[in-house]
Length: 141
Image (cartoon, rainbow, N blue to C red):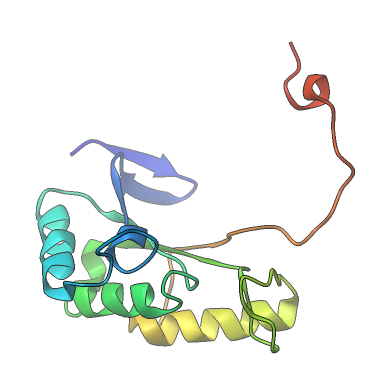
């Protein structure tokens, strides 16, 4: 498997997005054992970049990845996302990237993933608002 640098991280050029294993698609979440076998096979083939988010499920996708990586954490670069769940009462679908929410989110992700570190932790959606831009401002020639 070819590898590439993602910032300071050394990752496989091909990553595995886990959303469909427990969320958003017909049949998602129906066979955790098969999903875990898929993750294990990806690792065997050299896929190291695994992407999830707390909102997938919500939460159960991170739990699934945690189960799959038990005893194999050193083989993977784990990426997970925050910001689409407000832990202060708004729940799933409520954008919240406040510092307090991020602290709560990362603590929960670490627990669900069964790890003491996350390789790439990033914002799923921004709560910052800005004025609309015209097409030419978005895509200059």
